Image (cartoon, rainbow, N blue to C red; front, side, top):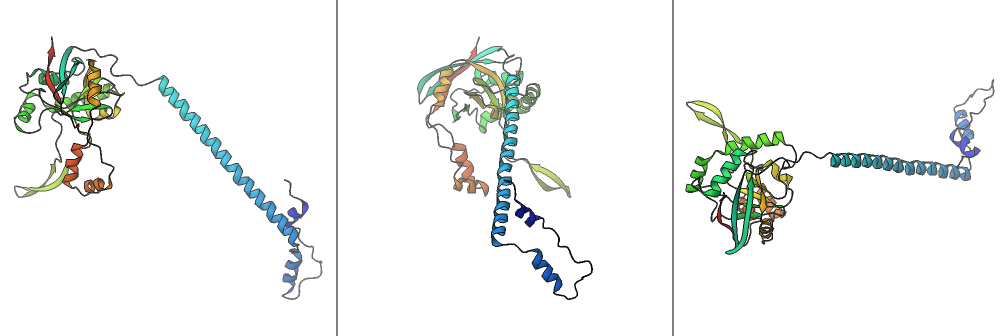
Length: 321
């Protein structure tokens, strides 16, 4: 809508011409000039005000369209990047691996046989992890997975509890292989293969706890001098717990070392995944407050989350020659 002449006169009024020889002689003269200069009717003021509002509304309506065009362009660029990532996915870490030996696990649920799981072990890619696992499966390490149970069932994987973290089993676990070698091997594999390693059907040993807090620094008096010491909070995994992945789980890459994959018996793993578990209640405000203030009852309750109600055991295990 084009502004009319009255609007233009309102926005840019012409200056009145003063007589060349008549200068204002009284203080009231400028007031008279201003009143003459701003003489408009109510109709003219209404038309000018409405026109100004229309101009402002038009500019406000145009701005969202321009921002929406920018956001649409950004979404198109993001989708193009996603398509490029799909066309060039990161290298899969399971394509070039071949099993060097096989192990079996016989499973029972509440005392009833559920079937056998056959696992192919990657001895050429993870020798330290495979040696640790095969020693526990065969019993050559002095401890074994027999009569040990699965302690956690998640939507994407099932986790075995391994051997106990105390008593005779723990001492034997420390002697049979250092957990540091598993962490070193985990570092090397992560540097070699940056993609997702815990794919569906993978078997992995838990080598570290990413939720473990850093060491607590404190001052200690030794021989009359104050020295800085680091106090470990919590304990690291002993290298005997393992997980069997039912769906691709990149979140496990930060804590587990892949040592093999399921060759037979994936239906047994899925049957374990269908066992009812203790409900995860970490979203409760009472649990959050207890966790925040360091209440030990929250830590005990957290250990029980996702634990199966039924007893899922490894009744027998060993290596297949």
